[in-house]
Length: 244
Length: 263
Image (cartoon, rainbow over all chains, first blue to last red; front, side):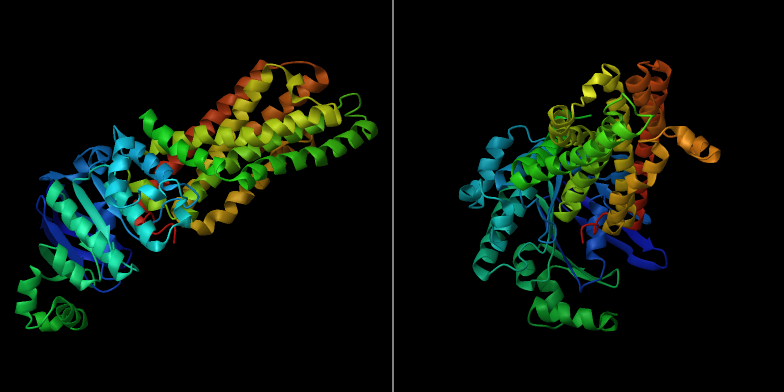
């Protein structure tokens, strides 16, 4: 599934959170969205998920305008995971996954719960309350929820934030593997540059609501004469004028 | 409407109730306390008031019906607040569920929460005070239906405020029913109100419900016109509540408040 954004803009009263941005994610590709806090990443994801109405511009799904498509049909092909959005803590992992299996209209959700929980090493926690899990386990449950419907487009907001290196590596391996097997398009917002280098085919760098640069990780590193993506990010985040 | 999705969302609340004994106890505790309090007040008035003479339990019946309204509304609000408190709000609103399915799920689940609290309380009143709400007979179903629809409507208006203003609107959730209670003529006839307030009271379903309850229990007369009026007014407000919810949702999408409502 292809996602394209054309001249997307969001204004809140006198403040423009996202300014006329353009990008696309081809089927099976991963786009990294980088930028300092408050640069418009969350607002952009909110618009793509239908939580925020854009002030201007278009979101195209397989060349069709999101606004003209059946909202529920499209959302059943999307999913989202973020450590800042949680699942009900008093419910068991299995109950949470069952509920989202039903909400996403997954036909054989019992089998799907088994699959994702096996893949993410969650089988032994299925009957445990979500609130009793460690942050690494909760993070994997959140990822399991985001995969319950076999999404065609997956939105990941800092999927490995606050995870120890071992679990972080496990999650990155899993995303990489899942992507290669399922041809899913992924939008990844992250502050972990090594993660972005490893997982993303293309990257856009945002600052103050605008896209200030884009390309593959290597092309950006080369273009700005830095040794790695982190240094490139710092250069872009600290001085926009150096780009122009 | 996709009933599997409605069932899925209802399950979320059933699982929550099932998972916690204190939560079940909380649902039963408050209505039961109300029964004790109003049971003794009712007994006192029965013995000391000419208006309530020989009509044991009118006040207690009114208290039970009012609590039914209160619990319906609070149940609806609580289920919505649970999504905010658990920071599950974004997950819910990005899932492919229609707004009308969310409303339907909360409406259907609220009745279960309400009945968990109200059935023991209503049954408790029979041996403790010799008062049975079931003496109202078949019209009781219509009165409860009208109260339920209006309770859900208040819930819808409060949740619309939560979407519009965020969790800071939470206090209004608790205060909403107390605001309308004086106009509802729950424990006294409408004639007690000044004339200008009577006009306002009559455009609410509560006054028709509680006047009809007294009519049945004191005069042993059933006014189907009054019952019909109560249900019609409740349905009107319910439709208004649904419209306000949709408007708030659309407004929240423009203001971007849906994405951080749990924070």
